[in-house]
Length: 104
Image (cartoon, rainbow, N blue to C red; front, top):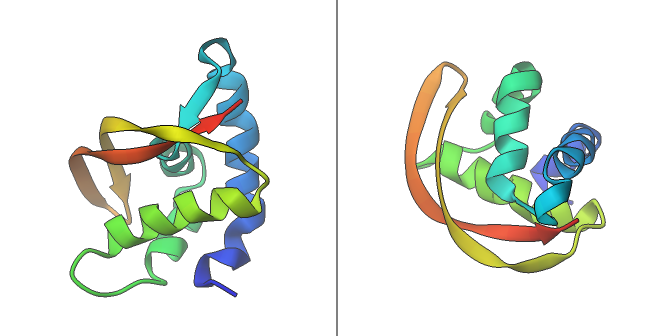
């Protein structure tokens, strides 16, 4: 069991909202879910971030949220470059990276 699994219910709630928000384009990406969590469930997102240590715990947590989407029954359809700005535990992160695209 992955550390992030304790938060699957919170992640699934984010997926449900994000799928509705992006229904017209027929896909969403992992950053859309993390952004929703940052804006709507910051306490839980901060708790998720605290599960991971090391050089870049926010990046590790974001990757683990992406992996958890499989457990939420989501279907991967590709990858793309995504630039985002988000705040996790009071720390702002800006930048671009490769993220997974998920089917709606």
